[in-house]
Amino acid sequence: DNHHNLVKYFFETVRPHVQVPYILMTSESDSYSPSKHAESLGTDDLLLKWYGQDMDLNRVPTRTRENANAVSKMMALPLGLSKYNNMSPYLSRYLELNNYTNP
Image 1 (tube, rainbow, N blue to C red):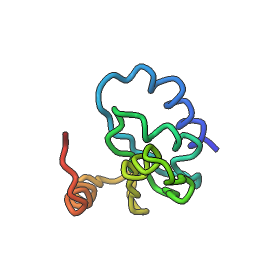
Image 2 (image 1 turned 90 degrees about the vertical axis):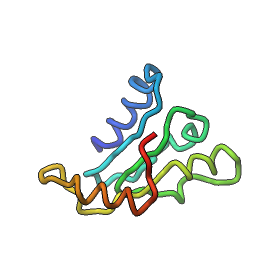
Image 3 (image 1 turned 45 degrees about the vertical axis):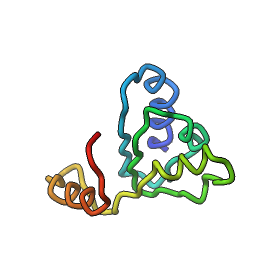
């Protein structure tokens, strides 16, 4: 699945070079997130939030502090958001309802 390959590429190739806090958004895939990268999310101090469609938080065991921190960083995006239409008003309202503030 292309989603898995892109997420893998991001975490293995791009992420090591990121030096500022970031927000990750993934969508338009039948693959779940966070995939196998969930284990490292809790210790990634620069990752503020991961918004994604098809988030599967059950794949992240919350027995450790790091994993509980990883789960707190993940937020499911509602299905139906589209890159082909202006979703900004809907996404802004969604983020507002979830008390998101831009750092």
